[in-house]
Length: 192
Length: 307
Image (tube, rainbow over all chains, first blue to last red):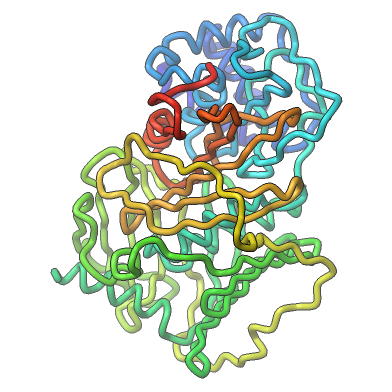
């Protein structure tokens, strides 16, 4: 399968649009790189649906890093720390909400934790700076198993999204569209 | 102005000046919302109300520049008007010429919500912005359907009216704010406020200028968050800058929500303070990444970064 076609297939899988039989056939035809991509997508989908997150395969990190290697080289250096989410977000078309990586207490100048094979340890102490622009955003590409506590989400839309929408409504000539976007996101937030 | 441009200007004017109500769909990916809009100008004040019809209640009520979001738990957020950086002539909705970075053409007839429409395409001339497909009501010039499309022509979001009444009677009481249990405010800071360092854009896509900025406080730490909005007349993105207090972890990341991309990165300023810079906007992800990668804080080199 070429990547474009694969994305379509993964997208329908993620959206639950394939039958069980189709799903099995697709999985059989997927190569390793595709499987790694699929794992990443599935993770995003599970978190989005607030389902129990399935254990990430043991070689998830290695596979993902390999799959990302060439994509990373095309990207700005500073994105290294968030390349997984960046790549996931860019391949996700408009069908799902994806992204966000979390580095906890990582200090200035330290290496980002994602290069380590060990799972990211959940952070226990100080409240973290809550700024996630889309409060509902899922976490993608975390090393190791996703900790349930890390997926805690605000009940409210982020002030950033609201402020951006306010600006956009005033300056973008898009009429009601920015407000519709905002109200729609707000309502979806309420279902979670 | 060319005929397509005049039509766009008429559309922007109709949106703000007419009385109407209707129902429309808003979709992206496999998300779908049904919304109701009511709009009226009463005694010189423009009122607008958007109500989410399916699922949880969410509303937005606007009286001129005052916007209130009513969330599903019946709490509210008040967004007060902020200061325009550019004269409204530039940023005002489609008042003047369309930015040079687009071309616009009429694309024949269509029909939406049982009304005759003119179809129009707005095509970007570079890869730093999205395009639009618009259906404009022949009678009222109101926007009946709108799609934001990426470079491959894929619709990133769609708004489409199912029913629209123009010139209908809408009462002032239709815009009353419901009783709510909680109020949040994204507050302007009292002067003099501690100013965060100014962001300097090392690179902006052609045609984008700073159109609006403010400094607000927001929960949970009540730290000042500075925001600057950039626009090319159609597309826009907003840059947020907030200090990261010592000992408080911050998050970096990239995410997408329909046509909107958000990226956060940490930056160290010359004064040894750490800041989180976040871009939220309807621009292609690669463009957003580049804007952030060439962002500067005073006392730092271009692209200085933690990673």
